[in-house]
Image (cartoon, rainbow, N blue to C red; front, side, top):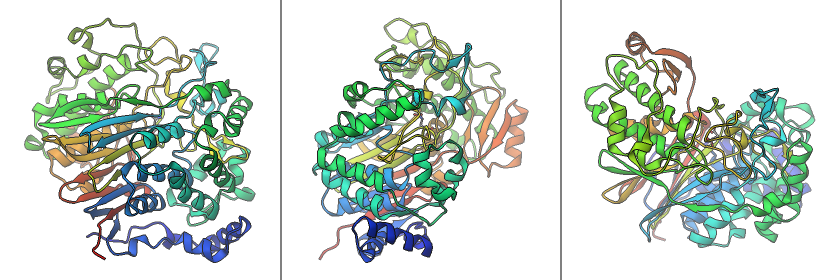
Length: 594
Ligand code: GLU
């Protein structure tokens, strides 16, 4: 069993936090002692529960960025809920504990391995453009509006999908009434959760864009909340109670829908209650590929994630990186960067919402097409101008006209994983796009609204241009890998376009290099969508390796942490690992004989 020392929850709650939290809870009708008891969940000290950066459990596992949310999910599993029940509870809890990264104001992709059906399914709750969206709404004087301006405008807010997705998941695969699964989040919102170090940093960084309602919550009396302070959200608690008592439709047709539409319109957007009432999360198929004999299931368009992850893995496969190159070898980084550049060229050219554009998914993963693309990769020199290929030659259908998208900003999504005793697995990446999304909180309701529509190209004309009711291209890549038909690995990350390369490298580090999950997560990674830059790279890459790759023509640009990967491995027991860049927690469950 692993250490219990990485908790960033109760132990970091300051005395100031305690008292203020207790006072706020008392105001909400709870006794201070009840509130304090609830703030100090004791799950991790109980028999049969293993908590840590890495944890194991024979009968269940939750890995998330938030200790509170992981514990909420683990409790659902312990009470007999299945992986979907726990995932729903985790998402609601994350909405409260990490409101800057995901929630009912956003959307996401849930990959689900249904052990009974032996199938991987997708619950797709990606946000949609409202009916009033136009292809040129992010242009001014023919030029893209600067990102800081366009992502905080009402036009950036997509019709949120998360609540609809949770309802769909519960109806199709859950075993518990959704109302029960909201209760822990209501408690957390009413009683307060300790502000994590990561959230505290983000509040300082993003204070400039928060509207008045959000400032009241995150910057009370003009003072940004600090690590350990209680984050108490009575408006959000009431909103979640409304959802519990009146149903999820409340978000799409009721008073919450009206408040969302009014708020977006006040911020200059066009969203109406009709847009919200039309929204339905969809059940989709994942993309499927194979790598080194393993089956790889990942997110299909409107995410570019799955196709691009699998393409990069397939481009690299014959190079047998693990056998031929050290994990920190300069040529290895060069080959990785070259594969990324080719795959990102195709991604930019061909990918968009499949309801609006034909995506050549088959051609992009056709082994003959990938082999042809691989000829453009040499261990000895840089390809100075990687261009998109022609995957249409490898499948039926006709190429639509398309153009390269504009570069997108790296956002602050979150990824979590749940596994239950029956072998069901959830790999779920969920988002409001940037940290705090658009910065717009619905006044009186505590919901942070996404800015997902900035994932569209600002300039019209390409596969990913803005169109009414369309879903913007995503990079989110929740992934499940199987061996001999048995799922054994889940992986996912936040980080906008860097998500794809974080997921690829976590897989390579674990599968090619045989690193343990946490070492696979910690092993430095790179992000190189264009030539000749290695746009981002992580500390730990040796100077000699950087020199070697530079001699081949690569330019190392910015050294910065990339992504926040969570992984789970299913063998005889589950093992979970949480990236510590954001203080995550794995909680494993093992039934004990009473
Ligand atoms: N909006 C991003 C996407 O869908 C996710 C947010 C992020 O982590 O950058 O790709």
